Length: 54
Image (cartoon, rainbow, N blue to C red; front, side):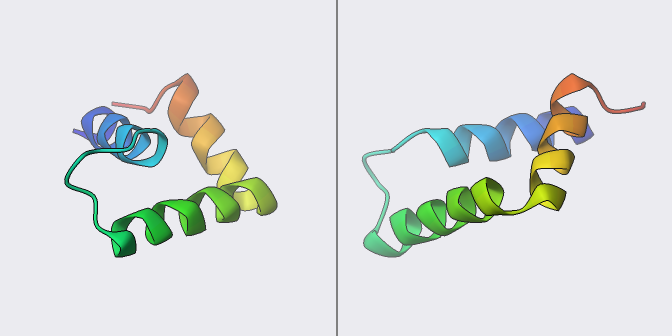
């Protein structure tokens, strides 16, 4: 379940969807900015990307 959650969140983070509202897009940009500027967020993404323990 953790892998599915990570996959869903990365898809939401890296794609634009036709039904996105202005608020959705602002949240997406804020999340990307946070990842870009936070070592902790980058570490979390990396740990999740290379594999989560079952």
